[in-house]
Image (cartoon, rainbow over the protein chains, first blue to last red):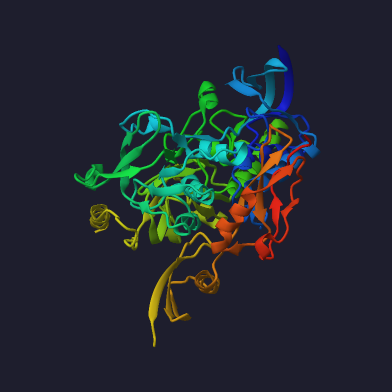
Length: 440
Length: 125
């Protein structure tokens, strides 16, 4: 068994972890160790061969591999130590000072690591068929979108010829286009909600290739003996029940699941870090610090981000704060004001602020709406022209706004509608009426 | 004879995602509605007259079994209707390892004035 002591351990060598490590290094921490489970650094981005990365961070339109290679090169050039093929499987903070991480790989065997600060950057993973409980047989040909992407863009296999995609999140839309580009017949994208899950710009993936999208539909049966032969879909009516007689049987040999991502927090749970049931990630404060001192978190392990540019920015913040913590220079928060999700808000990050430092908070709304006001506590309102569940809304909390907090210890963040978009096909008219009556 | 046609374009330039309605008379744009900005108006015109897209795909690599593919992209957007022809062109290719990021894989593909470059490093065989 090898023992090692470092200043900062970064768990996960994807976009968040690499940004955190680079930032910590640039802030004078020399003893950093990145632990990565995969054979290479980079996380998910090497398989995201499409463009659209880096528009905010680099002001350039890059592909996934190009974006992440810049960070991988920087880590290697600056001499930050990293171990790939290495699985971190335990995290503890017993004894107060110092955090322990247990990891293992083929060359070192068991690694018993100690650090002043730990940065969690484990990312997220995809929901699979088991999470959906779709009835039917259990044939081959059911893949998560990320698995299909890896097969196509790293390993060189097209895993199907007639493809149905379940879920209209960004990965699902991008894989619809990718399959179409490789000559597969894409039968459609099935979305349970009345609106698409992905970014608007990714809807082009469907319109360009004439791929239909079935909104307010769900898969109700998977057919096939050895291989998928067809999938039955049904319309979802009010009260979340299927509409009788709306069955459509779609012939296909492959079903791609793009039905959501879950932050990967097994390690956080082992360390008894408090999690937010809505984000699925650690509760964090404005330093990106979790409920245990000296453990920081960034990227998709905190909540599932829409853009890697935001992940990088968050990684840098975690890396900066962790470097201050490791040197004993991170001032404790004088006050702890919690941000709580209120009406029509799914979650708010960070969940704890001091009220002293201006910062940007991120929140995800439950429904698309235009011309809204976001209320933060009793005295702060911020107008927004448009909000959508597919895009995290960013709200700048300025010094002036923070002054209005007063003695409040909990700020409920809620959406105040002025006018709701109804042009989204299938918007449930009853939920609209309900919110109207509540307002009156 | 005047023939009016209405087309809807979802603008992709910023997160607002305006649903722009463009009215055409024959091939002339006569009205643009619901665009949030001037850039959006220009985008909707281009999107109707000559839509372009970033092209990206993969190309087979020989000599290094651990890395059977490199990923590639076009140096500039290509006309939308040329996406599939470009993909077919690349399907014919096998390039030898090593590949450096930015290496030109196909110069001036299908005479479009656009190069196809590698976006993934492949080490020496």
